[in-house]
Image (cartoon, rainbow, N blue to C red; front, side, top):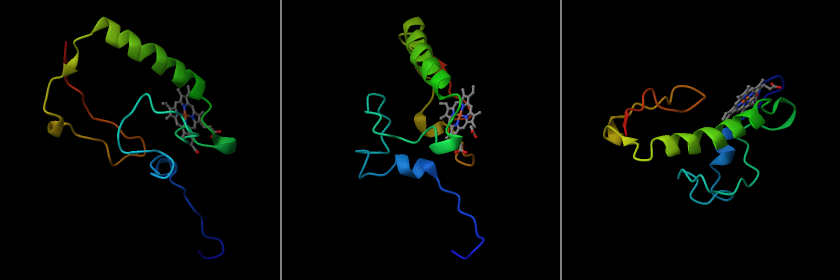
Length: 97
Ligand code: HEM
């Protein structure tokens, strides 16, 4: 690194550190928080994180209560993932219930 050059740190890489998070590529909702940095860290830490946490804690149980038999309506290999954006996800998620 030369003087005057900038650095962009990829916080997501920290959440995938296998020395801190066992089996880091596995989605595990019951995983302990273990000081993750999904909401950033420091002065620019996410201002909406408490709202986001509440929405997730309320919305997922409500969805599963309303549609207990909901399941994927396509082969998982058919899903198109948004891997060209900083915020990961799927373009569409077809389900049946
Ligand atoms: C699961 C949902 C969310 C995730 C994973 C998330 C993640 C993040 C991350 C990683 C940052 C830091 C970016 C950086 O370091 O520059 C951030 C910043 C921010 N987030 Fe979120 N966020 C979420 C939801 C929300 C919601 C619901 C709101 C508002 C209602 C919100 C408002 C903000 C704002 C205003 C900042 C900028 C804070 C600053 O620069 O001082 N976020 N978010």
